[in-house]
Length: 183
Image (tube, rainbow, N blue to C red):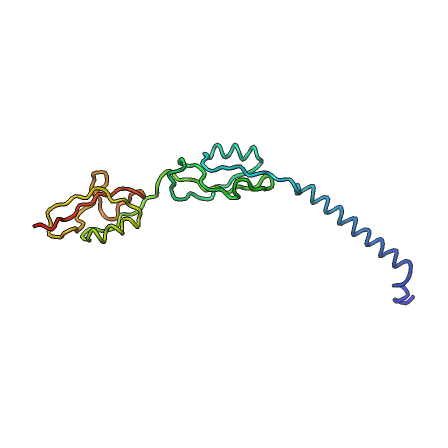
């Protein structure tokens, strides 16, 4: 039997039809199996977790068949309680599969500490923007007799003398001692 005769024979067409039917049935079975095992079309709504404590978040996520992963702590935000959620991914209201990880960013216990710059023997005009750039607040300004007018001679925080390089929380108030230009 030649190859061309075989391609036009009934046996070949029967085998071809059986192969096509087998492929279609196999594809149908695989697609149904995937629908069942991946819970196709079944979603969980992500709850709003912002401002809630870690303990509350654990309970709420467990009730919704979700898991949590703490990513990081951000800069302190005084609008939220300490150690509460300030950001989440995916966002609240998103549809996700069950057992999905919800990534959380927590509010730290306070402002991070920043090194106090060396502004001694600089003018107030030079020192002010440097302190403000580091998010320090300028408090009470006192003057003492010194030939350098408006030259920073000392720094204080809560009544204690500060040295350059000391660590203070962000937004701390620094009082300055300046020269008045008199001998």
